[in-house]
Image (cartoon, rainbow, N blue to C red):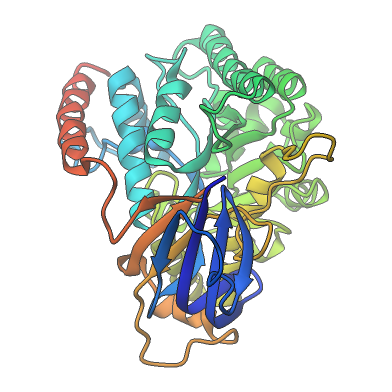
Length: 460
């Protein structure tokens, strides 16, 4: 049993979803959970590690609810990219060539670098959506290595598609999703400590326009076999909707729902052009929609004017890093630019909702023999919750209160304030330093990035 005490906290933001701030408290962490919080509670604790948070703000770690780790080596890409006048040409010329150029080592380094960048930004959990068509079997293990070696919490999956290799490609993606999910189950059942509660799985699919009806049926069977939910793009562009109407004569979510794919574990991404019936199905199923403001702007696909209509809204980046402070700001300012009705508190709640996705997907755990399994709780600095937290040196020129926290997130707090990060009770970043040679890892990643870019030039 390991005990960590975070003492002398200037201000503790207990919860982003329902803003609550306390001053002058300590936090006691036992193994992976918060076991006490309050004034002087750490004074008499027998601690293995003490973190002095005098003058700091401590807040729950952030969640990126949709990421693409396969994009980790794409920054500043110098491969020959053809014209990209629309969404489909952007996919064909850039992203579908990058993912086909990935091999085992580049997938691993992409995961490693994305995980490090997430931690530096105060993001303690990432929900990844992976693609590497030339390296499918075992690819989720390479992604997982990056998570575990940095100490980041998260989920991953392989996006099933028939866009490159038809039905054979679908089947390989299916096999990888099922294999990885069952591997996690087997490790938990055997009591192995390798996974240590940090990793979970979903059943990935690219988007409805690149998945046949047989592929959707296979996804439904995988859900039943593994007990996982789907993670899929939909209606990111009008093209996806047009294909669904032309080839299948159905709205997008109607088609997915006909195969039993929509439930309360579903992670549905973008949803810019969904019909009222589609939105109603998502809401009745209690599923989540993940909004990715910067990606939508970058791809010029339009703005989701129906965000207030979704029961469960979360925020992701769609592969543009994992800085959720920045993503929240872009989401809010784009909403204002579009004349939307959302305000900072709405986006802070959406940011916090990533924790609800984790709670629905990470299984309950048995901590004591003979006791019932306990659900895993995320996203609050409260007793019983997972010890995923951030120490920041944000110095505010104005009062920081429960009532105006959302305003500070929209106009002040940012990732440059992040100083120390604790995930699952373990310090993974302390005083802005990793406990390993980060510079060497970035150098290795840069070398593999150049190799990926060269391979892209041979892919048409």
